[in-house]
Length: 593
Image (cartoon, rainbow, N blue to C red; front, side):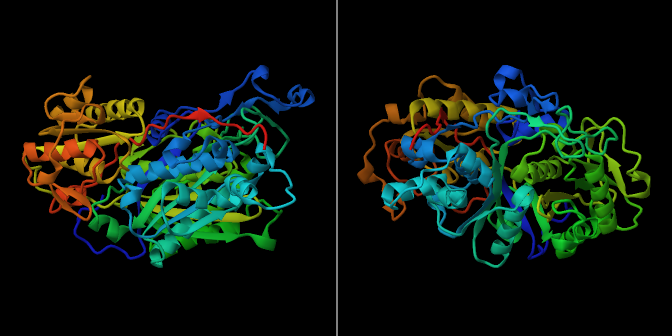
């Protein structure tokens, strides 16, 4: 991180302040990162009876029973968004996954949709083929309200507008269809909108659910799908990658504003670039080194980044010798001759090829690598392709997890995505700025709040927060309370505690029943609301002592509005990542219209 927290931030820098990721073998971004660091492969190898395909196909000797399956691809919690069960069944799996992921990114960033007053842009990519495979709606003679409702729920075009609407936001909603470069294109558009001042916050991502799931693929010589289901980037024996599903979203804000607002920052987007090969392609859909090189160089130029300062390159890395050779050639041209070294790897070795979200897996990997200052290994790489002349390039395959100690003194990563049809995209990320020095946390009571739709989910929230606090002892109580009180939507069933330390909060969260200065919706004491001060935003605490805070807690758990901005006014508290909402997913699958 930078040694000087007091600095002028580049007006083109965009902060990543929230991340949501679900991938094969990982329900959360934390599980995803743990899998990467420990070199786990999350591709599933299936038995015949687990796959529903044509008998002729599954018995074909070239049919590969491997894929990156996504747990819960067919499940959803519509109640959080006020969506009916009937509508939930009509929505495609990608529509459902994306709205949940966008919600998680907001909560991870510490933002309650009900408190956001500015414009929020949502940009996302999905696979139009999924909607068709989920079952196209009937060809209706007229377009009445029911037909419109079904069409908007099902349509790939409305994935982002559905998220904007059901989360309760206003702003731009743009769904892009740029094949496997979709995630990167969404991020590129989001950054442009933020920097032009068209939006105040942006959510960018992609969702991919391959149907039917689980499924394998048919191997063909020289094509991008693996002969044995394993992806071996840069390996002489590579034969491609297995197909996979997932969703990834980022919450973005201009860096200077994120620092001023005391947001938690995972990484900084220094530059982005996109282009298309067009007629210059050697073959339609195949990477064209000169055009890809121009895209990579363009992203660095936009960010004012020199190649010598980029020490991690997350490749598209399909694991097919021909495409890997072309990519290394392209990025070598973009980097030019230099003496520094750059780690190179590909997340496809862990999770397979995620289509429109493939770039998202790579971007989340890079952002978390910057945040944790750790380089994750590329697995399945045992015999480096001799036709890739790595010694003559700056790139060194990352074979083991390692502390990230850059030669240039700053950690930066480049992430490439390539889409069929000639789409190229590149992002340049940098480590977050060093946080400003803060005075030690002041002693005194603090109010912590949690809520959920029902008591079961509320108990789950308490348990998750307790475990999180135990696992992250560096978290300050003032930051935790600030993030809970201002960064979560207030729901029907509520819990509140007035505590003086992290230890007291952990104890309160662990308790089986309310006691002391803990209260819940189910057992709230009566409070004289006439004695409490109010403003336009709700109840205002009369003081910072424990009895005053408990009066506010007792009123809040019974459904009263509280002006939490007034409670935290004048503090130096920061937003910090905390567990997101524990969705209660149920299976929804369209059976008829």
